[in-house]
Structure formats: structure tokens, C-alpha cells
Amino acid sequence: MRSILIALAAVAVTAVVVVSLSAQSAPLDEKKSDDKRFEVQVTDEMRRHSRIGDTLYFVGTAWSFGVLALLLVTGLSRRMRDAAARVTKKPFVLAMLYIALFTVAVAVLEFPLAYYGGFVVPHQFDLSDQTFGSWMVDMLKGLAVNLVIGAGVGALALLAIRKIQRWWIVLWLATVPLIILVVIIQPIVLDPIFNKFEPLHDQVLKQKLLDLASRAGIEGGRVYEVNKSKQTKTMNAYVTGIGPTNRIVMWDTLLAKMNHDEVLSVMGHEMGHYVMKHIWKTLAFLLAISIFVFYLTYRLYEPGMRRWGSRWGVTERGDPASLPWLLLVASAIAFLLSPVISGYSRSQEHAADMFSLELTHLNESFATAFVKMAEDSKRDPSPHPFMKYWTYTHPPIAERIPFALQYKPWEKGEVNRMWKEK
Figure (cartoon, one colour):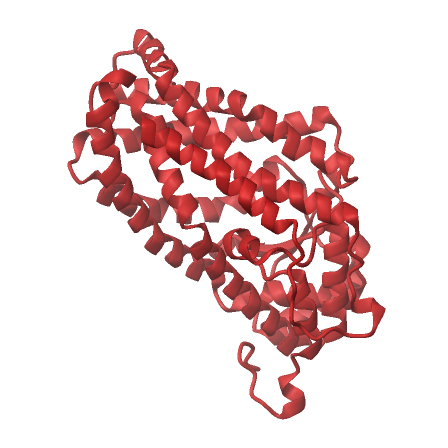
């Protein structure tokens, strides 16, 4: 157990060091335009908000690890299993009941940080008008979704661990259809639980987007707007779903704050993800990474069980009471792989930026869209290099703006690298 405490201390120390480093200015060597339209007005408020966000990332990680360790060392995990055993003796049903209790316990223990990061901070920086009641309803909806999905999937995973010697292979193989299923149903089943999705209202913009999609090679494209203003004042757009549920979604906040050319440049980026099949490539990448995570979890889970299982009241491999240990190991490995996953994501986002510029030639509109996003989110556009390396899934805004202004291969007679005209 001492190694767990050392790991938690290491995360906490890392948080202090990283946030301290992040507070220092990070010099960037990009060429800047003299046009003030393309310059983000960085304020002390933006820097403070960024520091809080950086701190919450690492503190939140340590907090989550601490919650899992607490459930083990206090015997609460064992008592939840015993409570489930008094209701039923059927192993699968018992595991489902335990996971339901475990999910609620974790939600309660993590609530203080979730409340601060998800409600207090956005209101402190005027990034949300959502009432506490509405926010709590969303939290409870999320908890309900986790209970419904997690109980069944988790019970099946524990069954496999208990019955199969090399369970890590089976669990990895099972993630393939499971992830694909979730990605397929998310836009039509899960997302509508929290927000209302509708076809784009602005008919002029809709026709422009359909024309742009046709040029990009997307026929019959589905473009939706969602009422994210219910939760936030920030802006975003994204690609989601697979096959019949694949779609591009724009937040209503983005539509309200950007002009048509800025929207087209942003949507050209999202169309790039669609055309370049980034969802499928990301799934393949994550599955490749996950086999490593499952194997290392397998190699650490069972020795830990043999060494500390009796203290935790865990009777056998796959015992529901061992779930916190399983998740603690897997979460620690995933945390250490964060730079790899973030780096891969940044490469895809940069490719999508290139696609948009090649498709639209709206360089200035793309740059002003980034300025609006940075100022609207109140995040420092120039993060410390370590934060970029560890946490940033997109290139920093301070890098994207000059790239948007300078990338014009068509002016040099060069062939497009991402968008190929049909």
C-alpha cells in the first residue's frame, strides 16, 4: 500500500511543479501579424483561469486516485460487496449491485471537486449562466447513464477476470465492439439526454455548408446545432458518430458569435475530420494503446491482489471488492500515457486545420475564429510547453493563428496535402 501513497504523492508534487512552471511565460517563436484582428488580448483573468484549469487537472487526477485508494484501505469496498451479497448470491447480479453502489460512492466522494471545477469556476469567470439546479440535473443524468452502462459492462468484465486466466486479452477484444457501439449510439441516444439537437436553422448558412460539404466530398451531410448555451457561453463544434449516425454538430453559442465565413472555416476543419476518417483512425489508435494498458494492468493487478488482498478483504481474482484496485492501476497507466494520446490528437487537429484552409482559402476568417475562441473561453493561448505536451489535444491557439494566416500552398503552386479536389 505504501507504493500507492508514494504514487499519489508523486502526482501531487507534479501538480505543484507543473502549475508553478505554467505560471511562467512561455516564449513562442511564431511570426505575428501587425493586424490587431489577429491578436488575442490576453488578460490577467485569462491567465488566472488557465492556472486554475491546469491545477484542477493534476489535483483532480490525484483526487480520483485517492478516492479509489480510500475505498480499499478503509474497507468500504469490502462492505459494499458484502451488502450486495446479502441481497443475492448470484455472482453476476452481485457484481452489478456492487458496481451500482461503487458508482454512487465515487460520485459522492468526487462531488466537491466536480462542483468546484464544473460549477463554481465557470460562474466565477462568467462562462456559464446555468443554475445550480440545472447543473445538478445534468450531473444526475450522467450518474444514471454511468449506472445503466457501467453495471452490466463492469459485471461482465469481473466475470471474465474470475473465469479466464489471460483475461486481459478477452477484455481488450471486447472493447472493440463495445467502443464502436457506444460511438454509434452516442449521437442519437446519449447526447440527446443532456441537450436538444436540431437541423441548422439558418437556411442561408445551411446552403453554404452543404455546398462546402459537397466540395469536400461529403454528400448528404448531416449538420446539427445544439443548445449548449444551456450550460456554457463558450464555443465549439465537433464530429461524432459512425456510419448512419455520423454528423457534424455546432454549438448555438458558436453560431451566435461568429460570422458566416468564420463558421465555414471552422466547419471546414470538422469536415476534414470526417473526410480523413479521423474517428476510425482514433479508434484504431486507442485500441492499439489499450492493449498495452490491459496487459500492464494484468501484470500489476494480480501481484497487488496477492500482496494486499487479505488486508482489503478481497477473496479471489475478479472479486467485486477488488474493482478499485483494478481501476487504480489502469488509471495510473492511462495517466502516464496522456502525452502520447494528446500528441496523436494534436497531429490530427493540425491536419484538419490544413484541410480547412485548403478547402476554403478563408485564412483570415479562420484566424479571427481562433481569436474569438481564445478570448471567449478565457484561456491563455500560450500555455507552458509542458502543459501543451501533457494535456493539450489541440495545438495552442497562439500557434494556430499564425499558421492560419501563413498557410497558402495554392499561392505557391503547390499541391494540397490534405484536401484533394474531386
